[in-house]
Length: 176
Image (cartoon, rainbow, N blue to C red):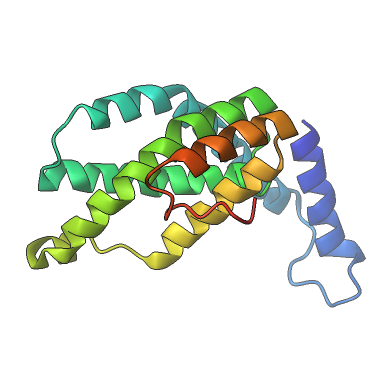
């Protein structure tokens, strides 16, 4: 409810109180549509959070065939959007859930990115697995933002694991 009222206040400001000429006229339908989308994103993030451990377990049990690598890539793309929503406050999760989502997806992404990168080197897979570098950068920024919003004890735990890991090149958490 806090997020909904905050979003509504921001919309009202943008529509009525800003000094610039309004782009849109304040309308209850506009407010309803934008707020509905925020609620849908919140529901989606909760569902993705609930399914994350099972998704990662299922993907880790499979050998790295081209199809499995592509499914891993698609899972990371969705996770990127979910983490972005969490990191930038579009969806508010309690600290314990934010920590849990990092503990599930950070190791998976850390290990999977080199597999995806090596698959992309293969000419046949390059078209199939075309990956935008901006997505990896966005994912890395989301990880950093979420880590920075955690209590210092949780930050220390995650960063210690990161420093001890052999896949330290990605994601780069030095900013955190």
